[in-house]
Length: 594
Ligand code: AGP
Figure 1: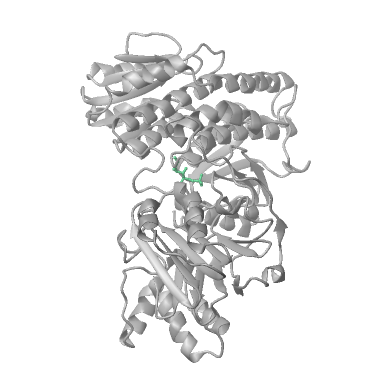
Figure 2 (figure 1 turned 30 degrees about the vertical axis):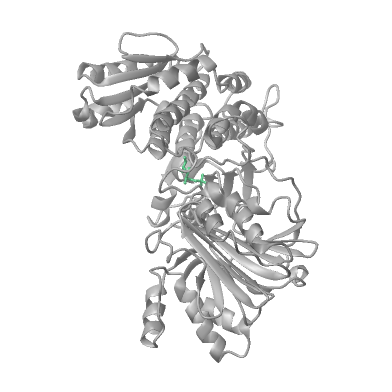
């Protein structure tokens, strides 16, 4: 979703902006722009489409010496993805970038228009700049003008503003959308996530909601909550893979080793939680969006069957406004790869307000969700660049599985033998996520037959139902084909009406969980001529096509092995269709608006 960068210093500001925006590119955007203020000249460039267009547009622009700059990648909310609607938005002497949504923008715009102000764009953001310039005329100083402007806004925002009235400064405000400021010797950087800052700064401050201020080269140390920041720039190379998504699918074997490191012992599991963590917890409520929701739904089956803990799972956007009943003995778990998803964050705030014990399962340390939750556990998947989540999902399921065992171990809900068996299964699941080249080749070939039907059903039962949901989500995200995940037993209650030879049905048939039941459901579709592709350990006669996974002794290994098949199937179909797998249309990696 939208990304922000800002800079104060002596480097070539255009290059700093472009390279910062490149680091945010994977999050998804439809237009981009920068403003540079140097030697009293304010220059703005914006374009639609990819950053290369912006680079071409400003290729002859140079700004040497000290100055300030702001940059933005936009994911359209108010107004189409046009050049005029791209950020920065500028007035006569100032320029602004903004993430989030200004809910009362129409009211402000109407008032300003009635006073003769001309608006160029259809965005909510443009009101900020005109309001600021109006306030500059009436306030005694620029900070007061900025504060008055921000105090008139209702909604969520991370805002950076530069103005010729204060040419060495960046004004900033945060409410609901993430914003960081960092410093190194003689330089200040802003960004909406830590990715563009890694390797450039040695100190960082994660701004809090309600923070409004102005920054110049000397004022970083006036901030509170400054933390050291280290780390090399993460390798953003594809290492020979065609797409980041492909690399991330292959990485899962290594990632899961990191996820379980120090958490799995010989006879028990251990987590970075206080000894009294489970005290007073009798049930679990999980809240998340998208793939993270699918991981949460998978955890429900594990928590209830294997760990004997009652669990409910809710989509975060539905939870927020439903006036949910929150029982005090619930552990409220939010799951998020990015840690910035607006709906999940708001659901978490609601649970905190209701004094629930809250736990974040997250991939990004110091993200808004990690900071908001009372407890957190990191999935350790590393930066995920493909918009379609893969390694984040497997690491979430793995960590939740361990969490379930941890809670039931602490509460003596399951026996030592059961715990040992699960630990053995966790260890062999690490083998199940290794990509088998035979299976990958098979899916490359198979993919050409699955391009032109009228839709896909992914079916599974029990924990293979959330996996079916995830398989369908992966396919629709990157191939743009219509795909739905269903519990196998639900077909005959309506969806089977769609069955004909142009309907592709991917059936997940684990040997170790409800095999006969899902076989029956698959047979019912086959009898109505649907084209059936089964994923299983052994051949059976229902299939038109079959993807054989390796032999495993329990259903969770089969779960992870089938997950790899579904991820690769989506990847290969999308590649055949010529789509941009890593940055699919209309999608953003981190969804920071509700
Ligand atoms: C996954 O492939 C998606 N891109 C999307 O559903 C994602 O899982 C969802 O937006 C939630 O994101 P989060 O995990 O960062 O909170």
